[in-house]
Amino acid sequence: NPFDLSRTPGGSSGGSAAALCAGFSALELGGDIGGSIRLPAACCGIFGHKSTLGAIPFSSGPSWTPDIVVKGPLSRSAHDLAVALQEMAHVEGPAKRAFTLTLPTCEKKNLQ
Image (tube, rainbow, N blue to C red; front, side, top):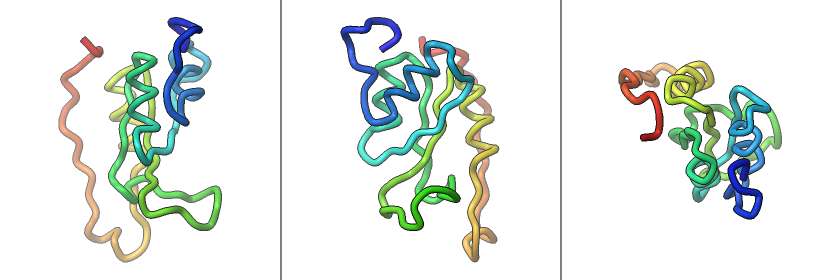
């Protein structure tokens, strides 16, 4: 954890969260089943979003993915998180005709 080395950055995306919080990157992508985006975001004081199943495609990596794993962005601001999700989200195949992503206006500027 960038704030206290004796504490965990939390979850399997903890390294990504810690790197983002420390300023090593502008945006990170995590995978989530049971809190692996949300817990590191909370531990490191950043923003994380567990997206809807299938909203961010698995276009790289293994040819199979469990039907409970989702990808989602991590960022240092709510605005960056919304922009990242808007850019990464899309659905392929027949479901694409029925899929729309409409995000509400982001009113929060920080975590307080």
